[in-house]
Image 1 (cartoon, rainbow, N blue to C red):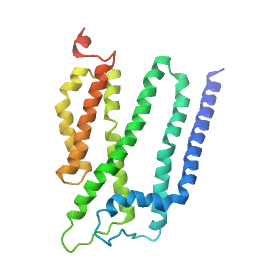
Image 2: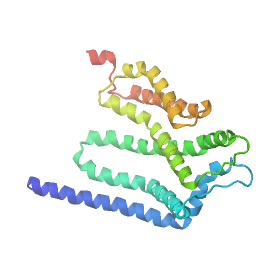
Image 3: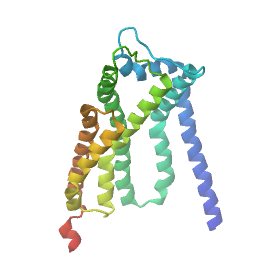
Image 4: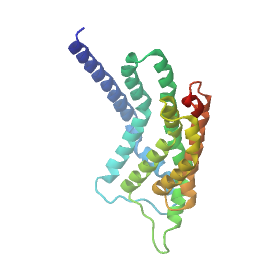
Length: 245
């Protein structure tokens, strides 16, 4: 097979994989479509539970009541189809990898997906009640909290992404060590900087109260320590002494 034919065959394979990934997403969306309003109600529950009795959310645009539940449904379908979509990417890349690379990447990929979902679940069940309780409770007297559903969606998506990616810290630490960019001793020496950076990120991505900031900063720190623990277990994890030799 000539290089041109090989390149074309790879493009055809990539197209097939992308098509299968898109079909998986569309099928998940079609299955969830009848439950669009229910999905948004579940997403809005953490805020609604903190609002005063009889208070409700509002829609300030004419099309918002239709499009916001559709966006939630598309996001939920994407998350459900995400393992299938990543599998299609893996099936395209895997034939070009060595056996030891497959053994290394496969568990990291599965762990990254699991940690991202765990981070989102942590945000929904633990962080949202605290954050919305603080925001609603801090409203001045005489001010009715009536959040627009589109702005609420943007806000919670930001928090979902912040905590989802924050929970990827162990994967990032392990990859840095495996690639030889940092040693275990260097990772340990960076602990103080990581803690400071975690609280800075907590101040940026959460409301301005110490509890909400700690709910992002402390998990970031603990996940960094988990990454160090995993690196310590790796048989090929380099240290300062071994690197010097």
